[in-house]
Length: 255
Image (cartoon, rainbow, N blue to C red; front, side, top):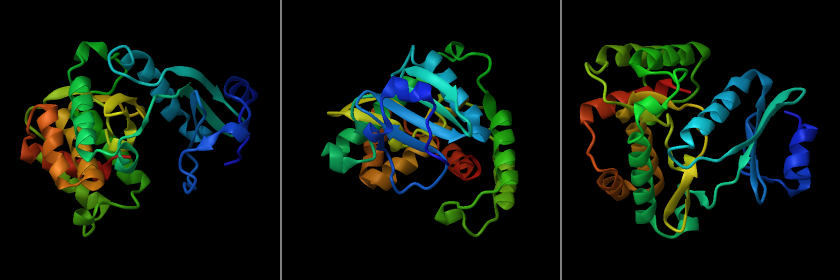
């Protein structure tokens, strides 16, 4: 991907020599930079729908939970660009920057509790809803190709995982507004307080265990097994373990 931001982006956020790349080791076409006041994200034009979804979700979801405000969405010659306000703090997966593992687990639990408390009526009709649409996404992802899965699932092909997952569909869904990937890197925190969600293109109405599965794995990996208990205590409910297992498997099948 060529690093040639549109003139509108540079005019808004300033010259590129003031941009700080979030992950300098990332060689993927999706890139994110920060300035003092802004976050800038660029994707290939073929993935433009991702940025559109993120911008649309920020506009309605931001009325209920903290998200970065959209300031500009524009297409370049080969890439699409999204500029948002910069949220205070740093991602919650960095205990070395926060100094308190327990508080980060509490940040995750309270942030997800607040999101899941938002009324379903707040979501526009365009937001995908329920297991059937989640299954369509999983099928499309498997068809496009999945390069890696978590270690417990490595002995299966993606198609075999999909065949294992479908029959275990929950009889009844506990529907909430889900982030879609509430891993700790997608939660910003400052001085032990949650400051907002990022990467919200995948917001959907789904069983709460979809989000719990993502958060469970992220808290365990980044903060340790004991922090998982703190996370659920703060969230305010223990998971249904059978349903959690179903959505842990779903994680392998989703983009």
